[in-house]
Image (cartoon, rainbow over all chains, first blue to last red; front, side, top):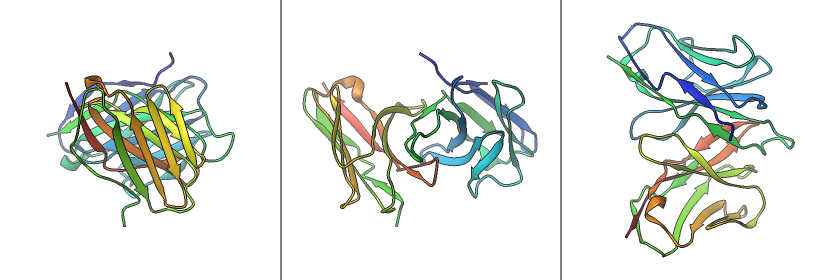
Length: 117
Length: 110
């Protein structure tokens, strides 16, 4: 069964460093997303990406964050100058895209646990 | 008012019984509703999607939607210990963005 894969599973970085989280979405999916979950809190939307551009982003997704689809398979999240409060699980997700707007099912990768020290 | 509200639990149900999980949402224009299951330290796993008023059944799971009351629920029949997890209710906001509730922690007692 196709699945979203993420690497690495765990990343430890020093405050102020840059990290890149990687994702391979399901191959026939057109929409890609990043979500994050701080320990004990709810899953929060960061950004959605379609047709090689950001389609929507949240207030969390400020200039510190960027996304890229560098080739036909990978989707990356870059966090520049990490802060302690960036420590969280980061989930990549993908969806086929709606035949009717909104009617789409998103499937999540296993996540990258980012720890900023 | 929170966009998606769930009772955080924990909800304890004996094995073999029916577990009932509830969710309310504030956006009356919402059209798409999802239940995800999340085991501790793992990613959300899609269980059910529902788009129309009424019931939708899939195996031991039944999702129920009442748009007039802005209410969506998930029933798990013949609950098993492996069903113990946090259940996340989510809606689509805008074109594609998922908005999650806090989740309800469910424990099935053998």
